[in-house]
Length: 461
Image 1: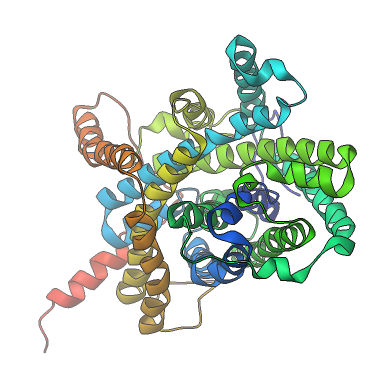
Image 2: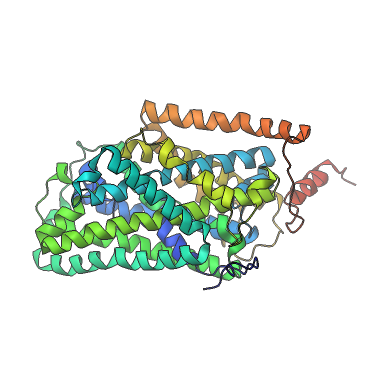
């Protein structure tokens, strides 16, 4: 693993992106329980097998192509800016960053929730507030110290979160009754909960793009990291769900977030329950540090492109974007008034808008910049690229339709803020109230668009 040399101001590239990406997407099978409550075992299992082909695979492939085409920290904001212009590039960056902040509000809360059964004082009041603040400060400090810390934390927490599920899987085998997997009631399905659970657990493949500028040889490591992470994530969700639903009688109402710890006690005893609870807590720690890394480096990349004030591009002596880290850690306090499921639905709603822009940018760049270097290119033409985006786009529309009014209002207010923020920042730049600049080390992302316009405007001889 290579990363910043701590303390001396010299930065080398980070080469553990596969681990961070896996930790960013895979939640250690925690959070999949609601899919059983929403739709029963059969649809839950089918969902975690089929959904990746509709959503995860296309998103990962697009990320591999675009991330190697633009190997810099702005990630998807740079893709959209190149294809649709800086205004929409900013909107993409804003929506994705806001989505990440909302997502990050979940993990310290979930961490404390898994511990409160052993420490009842953490159930509410001042002890809970102090614990949340202390945990947030500690995890934020780990990100400040650099990607070396984040990488090794992701490795250790990833292993710790997987092991109890492997053990519980083997213990469950003698108790499995295959007929339990076939239980389904299509007339009694909570589609909103079902789709949001699948969507939340199987998205975020594009988040690694905001660390592309820190990755050593991204044209080779990025596609491999996405491939390995995709395989591990799908297996890591499907097999725990398969063994647990087959090992115990079905009581759908009990299958809510955290129910795997109860299943562990039924299958293996109290010791296994404690292990699962500890793994859940550690998994949420890993997700927090991975999310903060992705979000903060995204802000750094946007600042390097002149989309945000220059101070967002300042690095600490460990090579980390300090201002971006502080901004990205703010969601824990700001979003504490929303419930777990409302937070999940709100971030999914914003994520859908961002993905639509990504799909448009992906296809448009295939049209206006077909000859631009793509170290990794999906082996399809423009028509194939367009067709590949249709199934996930339909899925996005379905998720949006099933969203509640409260989630819709909160999300649309967030989108509206971004629509007016970009012109305000341009006014601030024009008045020179804050300094904006574009890094001279970055390529001209608008060159392909200008060349295409020139070709269209040129008279045919």
